[in-house]
Image (cartoon, rainbow, N blue to C red; front, side):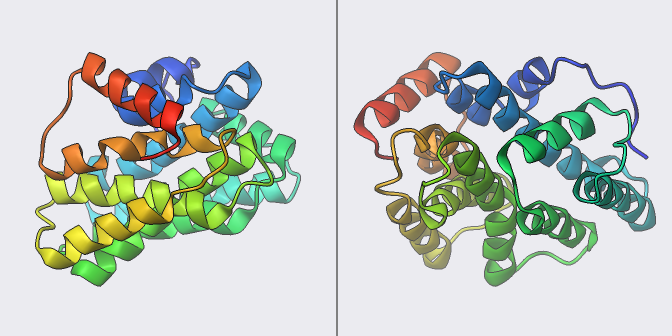
Length: 230
């Protein structure tokens, strides 16, 4: 079971642990929608923590199962356990009719991280699709229900691929081609939904293992939002 030491202020939490996507969310004008997008990122953060803080694979599985049970509560209309992220996710799901499948895929992707075997390129791309891609698709649905989910997923996938290239040693022509294709696939996303993928503009920087300053990241994101291009 995840520790109950997380702040109720999920926005502050994401500002610290997920600055790229937090900065993207600053371009969401509606406060309620912005909070619901932050709830998705907090959920993704919780799932990402499971393999990292668990002492062994079994404990990691138990943590991930805990979140699958949260989804059971959310989608079966049962009382949702008193965890700030679980409560916020339940509210966002109810408000926007979010589907279970991508939320479930986000859990399944983290099981792969419990394996000691390194991911090959195909595994890595699937992981990126089911983490950053799924989160971006859901965020876009919150911001603009008519937005193209494939374009949103592509932008989120690009950001995740960039991070893998920069932190997990995923290199080579195949990885670079996948990053380029994902960035191209995000083109044309509606302006209303664009904050769901704006952080993908940092993917190429992240792929080089660099971390831009907050000012540089803000400038890149602002330009991306103004031009509608990642």
